[in-house]
Amino acid sequence: MEAKVLIIDDNVGSLELMRAILEAEGYSVLTAKNGEDGLQRARRDRPALIIMDMLLPDKSGLEVCHSLKADPQLEHIPIIILSTAPIEEHEVEQMRKMGVAEHLSKTDALLADSSGRLLLQHVSQVLGAQPQLKADHSPAEKILVVDDDPGSRFLLRTRLEAEGLEVVEAADGEQGLAELQQCSPALILLDIQMPRMSGIEVL
Image (cartoon, rainbow, N blue to C red):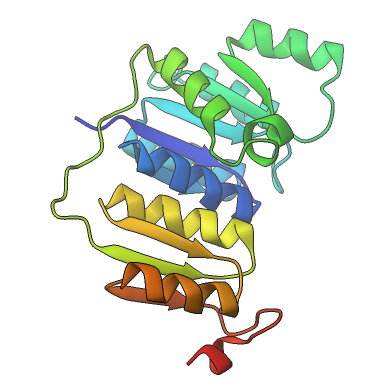
């Protein structure tokens, strides 16, 4: 059975990146964009793990942690806190007292390593199990992703590979045409605005 992971983060880019990383490893991902929605989602869906940003628009991560740990139905759920800014010593002490399982730098967990290995390692450790196995699809069809934004390519690759598809990447139109000659993809995902050669020119 897939482990449910609830991500609470108002930054859409970070939220979608974490969703893609976790879903690619077989986790079932729930999302919320503020603390109150996160609490409601936790009460309704009872996730196995909560990953939460320290700074949320309506409540701080510590306030949400306090509410979770004060609820007998939710107090057992482990929490991983992510933060972009350095955490003060008194905040670290508060997290210890509330039983927060892990605290990670968002930069280290997502930006420094976009493969998400650090995040997955901590998720696996907190849950006490290895990530779920991906579904096996055979044969794998090739998808060519042509986009100059590496973040967009990563998200697409992660989502598509989670479905058992083989992904070939190109960073601009010229590379895309070269890859097209080599791999004969079943589908091309093409960005319109790119340097050197636009998506329209590729078409």
